[in-house]
Length: 209
Image (spheres, rainbow, N blue to C red):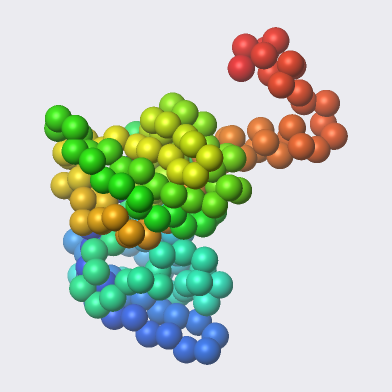
């Protein structure tokens, strides 16, 4: 499990693809501390397993399905990627629950500066938009963000300067592709409401939700 608080931006050092799988090697510093084979690493929000590492570089395996369904396909040698290690039991929970299981990708449709913040509007498929709520949480390239507005075509988030400086989002422009993961708690609620569990909107309201 992750929290959507990016620890550092790594640099893609090597990409190797075959007919059955892909390996991705990333140069990093902070996340290398106490790293082990088999550890989970969120790379632009995607939960991947570390299969090899040395003092300054780690390698993860990527299934072709993951490669196709996420933004990994746009990465090149030298690309920056958001990195976060899995949350330890005694870690600080600074963002929201992020599983690293991407729901799909979105496309940046506009970027607008307002004061010291930058507003990003991101277009996404209906299946993803239906699971987003205003003032709720969403992970964009693994970054825990608060949703400001949702429409039938897209949603918007406001980014503070610190987040822009410490993640790859500051490098993204209109047309850029980002990984999206809806709030997992919302997914469970939606699932319960669409199956025969007896959970209804009226019941949730009466219970204070």
